[in-house]
Amino acid sequence: MRKVLNFINNRFLYKVIYILVSISFVTILGEVKLINSITSKIMILWSIYIILRDIILYKFKNYTRYHMFLILFLIVFLLSIVFNTGKVENIKIFLVAIIEFFALFSLEERASIKESINNIINLSKIMVFLSFIGGIISVMMLFFNTKITIGSNSYGISGKLFSGIYNNENTLGIMAFISIILSIVVLANGFNRDKYIYFLNICLQIFILYKARANSAVLAMLIFIVVLIILNIKNSFIKATAILMLFTSSVFTWYKLYNTGKLSLYLNGRYAIWKTAIKVIKENMYFGVGNANVADSVIKASKAPLMGVEGGGMHNIFIQISVANGLISSIIFILFLLFIILFIHKYIMNNYGSSNINVIILSFSLLISLIAINMFEANLIYIVSFISFTFWSMLSFILQITESPYRHI
View (cartoon, rainbow, N blue to C red):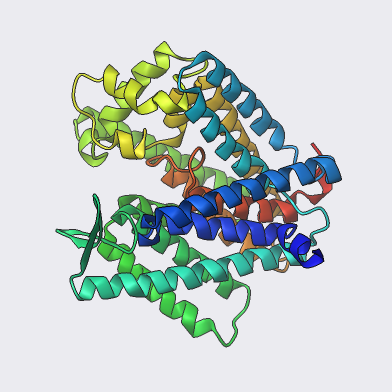
């Protein structure tokens, strides 16, 4: 019995298993519906146990001051459920948000800095191993021109599209991107006898990233490099100037594309979705239309067919939140991200030269990149996604290091 309790009380193990389960959902393993259904229910029960244990045993000590933003977010979410239809489906999505906010994004009461760094490294190693195996199988499918069709889903090669063992090429590309960065995180912690495996994995995933042609993953890689460069600029004036120049050039580029009519071309249908979504937000500004009604509401508000709404939502997490739960929720979530980014950045600036700072910088840059992906996707909250679960778990490990003096909410 003690071994069972030790197992289910192991917060790191819980996070790792949940990420592994979420990865299986987006691969060909996701076609085994019975196993997915059973594992989902087990993980939900485990999540509820983790949250109740935190509240009863630790009296909210495993949560940070930033959880106040998430509590406000959930309050508005509840009001959105009350005022909108589709309550059963909305409650299910509400439960997913609670799991992300309070089970995955929770701290270990007695975790030291060394233990937190080890958590980051061990999680990285596990995800690299899985993505390496998945990458090898995917490349073999590419070389042998293999296509596997199960129901309406295709794996491997489908025309010009290459998705490997994953459910689409975008997922394959994002997994390759994450695998590259996590390999670098492991190498940054110190070279060991396995270093050549991580170099080999980086080469493999770069090849996959090239073949997948996933625009979101390429954008994430560019953002990662830019953030990494900025974080390594120690002079505050130079750093502020670089950020201002990047922001100004980005705004100018978007404005230029909009004026020339090329913006919709580059956004691959997202422009039409966003334009229609803004109409829906204006009409449902405070509590949105409810998560269950997002796709239907936007489709009904559009005069022309919208591609990708039913499968990918609004393709922007902030627009997704605004449509689903209202503009207030979106503002709260933006403030949450902003305060966390500023605090972790301050910690990095004050701890240059300290041991393991490179691991924190790389992990933090990865988180920023995942946020950047969600400017064009909507998988940071609301859904069971390896992207969202990686984000919330990795964020919790970083805050265990940076937030320890201010832990209580």
